[in-house]
Length: 119
Image 1: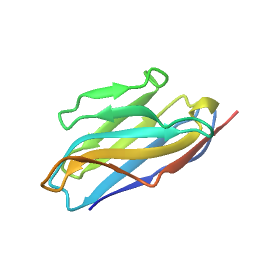
Image 2: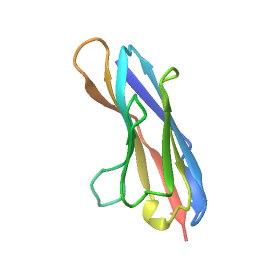
Image 3: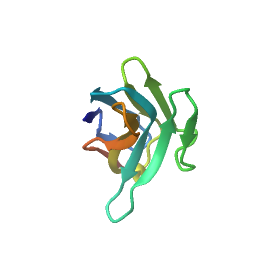
Image 4: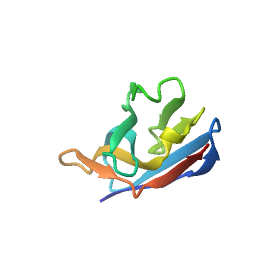
């Protein structure tokens, strides 16, 4: 099994910053893409940012220029630096990894961490 554990969520005022971290552990042979998704109340889960093992990044239009994703391929961690937060960023943020334990790649999810931005 592959386990993802997030940390770093919390309450912040609009305009502030937060940094989310996610650590992958377990019987990992290789991790391809890692990313962050979010789900606000009443809305579908959406991609926030992703990064490949080679460092290629992808961002949702709504966070471009404000959020930065990074990863450590040795430690199997991924981080999301969130700046200039606004109330629309309030959501549960989930870490995601496309990983293999030696067989087919599968998608794994963390338990989620709440980010609340107050006006």
